[in-house]
Length: 187
Length: 247
Image (cartoon, each protein chain N blue to C red):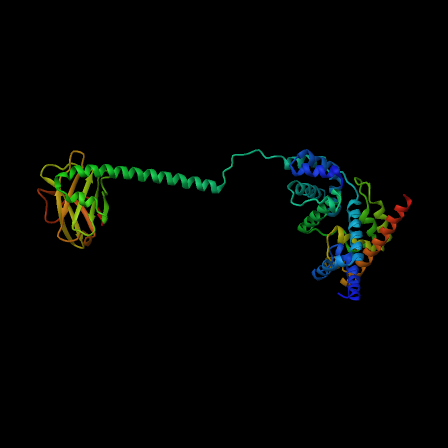
């Protein structure tokens, strides 16, 4: 457990605004970036970021230090908040069937104000997957879409969607584990 | 569960783990996974891998600087709100109800005080009319009506009677003084029939009390009225109606 995180959360629970500001300064960028990645809209991303920290402030959800890092917990809240918002907005997903061939570029291309800090490894892993599998994983994870949603949007048969997703996720896990193990050996 | 069945289920669950981790399983599949996960260590390990992978995916998105004012807005949104003077509708309704109650109480207190004062005056006025007046004002079966005036707001009368008797009491106030040779007369009416209940004079303040007896129960009558009549009164009303009211 990170004692600083625990102390920070204890102070936030006591409605210490400076502690909330410290939490925001530490993780606000990651939260905003994930919200933007899902919503693709700066205004909505700002609202989701504010909602996320507001949930922490109001203690609508509790962080359990035994279950993971504070940042992990914050990003999980952000993810579900953004997906909820995305569904409410009923926005069309960024990816369209016509764009699937260019999925690896469109999914992770950086705009002028975007710069990679982390995630390079993951980008490389995803790039090793067949493009159509990577695209479906993106729709499921970053757009919160179900099998049926994906089949409707991509006009790919439902059975094919399920097979591609399962295969793609299993392969992604294998690639990730290989990478993690290699990194461990290098240390 | 037999070991080979358990292995079979765990294999099925392990196959579902990728979709379960990404929220893609249907409710039946979700229940199946959650019911058996604890008994399937390999599936649980796969799930833990996917959870870490998801964290990497969340953390690994392109990083963007949030707008500089976002932190300030968060501080504003979570700042303690100054207490403002706010009246909720329910409180307002309660205040109005309490106010109305107080006003009503004050009104009735004044009325009771007024009636008490008039009763005292009445007692003084009927002192010369014998004990029945005191019997009447102390009865438990007392009925009374107010007889208003349509033309003279200051003039009014109260008639009280015992529901079980033929004795009544009329108290009037604000009546104008009559010219010499005229008198006030109380009439009880029932259909077209008018029965005289007696005559009276008022004092200089327009007050008077009349203790009356009629041959029949007062409850048999429907209206009461007071008119001004010549001399010592009339057999039937002929003058102007000063007050009248339904019994």
